[in-house]
Amino acid sequence: MKKVLFAILSLAFSISGYSQSYFTDSGTAIFHSKVPLHTFSGSSENLTGLIDLENRTVDFYIDLETLDTGNGKRDKDMRLTLETEKYPFAEFFGTITSEFDSGLKETQNVTVEGVFKIHGKEQDIKVNGQLTPDGDTITLKAGWILLLEDYEIEPPKLLFIKVDQEQEIELNATLTIKEDS
Image (tube, rainbow, N blue to C red; front, side, top):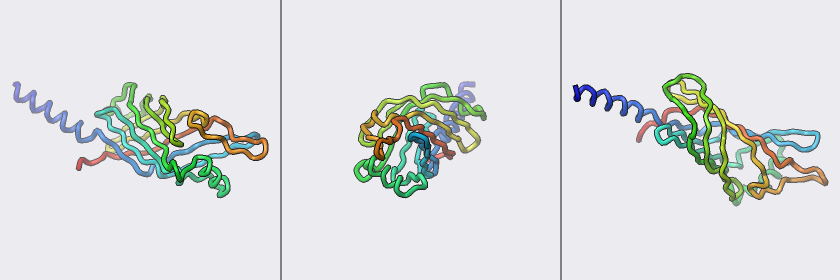
């Protein structure tokens, strides 16, 4: 009986260990910004990330040079403001702090707490999102409000019109099982 129980437990751990890490290099990061009487967004399809369910960690980054607002001058101003030559990446590393059951094939609300870094500055943040497991993939949808002043980013301005301090951030990605190497 002990041998049968050991074999079942070994099989369960090997199956769960095999499918615990999910990876993407083609997620979407979007920011929404406001100036008086106008809103605009920028996005990138180059969000790279890893979700490790065994360790309950989340690790994402994006090359800020890949953000595109659809306006060349605005993109240039944004890159100068973010000093992308000096600080090319935005990064987040955190831990899933809420319940999540990868065995449930339904959308689940999750909370992740960790450190977000941009413009050479780091802040502890809490991100609320959703994870949807589906076979060999997990779909992620998450978002938070970023305050430019928290990262010592001076909002660009034209005359007396300034970009709002609050930037709405969205992440969307489908991650696939990362094969052990």
